[in-house]
Image (tube, rainbow, N blue to C red; front, side, top):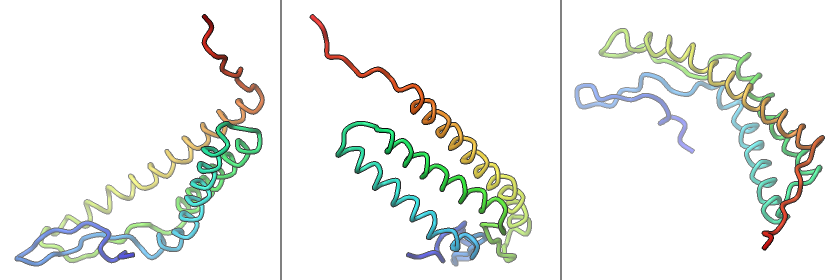
Length: 139
């Protein structure tokens, strides 16, 4: 609700100064991120109500993971997600933060892609080889 306050702030001569914040490009992806989050919550609520995984719910889970991967790939290939402001009492701070985020943001997005890919493979394995149902305790 308040995107202008997101970022890195510090106090300089009794004033708050913003060094970096989310770029306009990030906010273009936000509706898709929110939609994927809502789909995931809906699937989880359905799973809680149903009480067990089925082939349908596993395919829906794979779908939400694929949507997440698509969003991460688009963010990786798109413009920078963080904006750096040139003004700072510490002259090199924006450049240092920019260098860190130039490497960190793509690394995090790649990690999301790899971990989501692993989850998809695990779910596909469970579709092909379903686990045995749990049996009640025997005396």
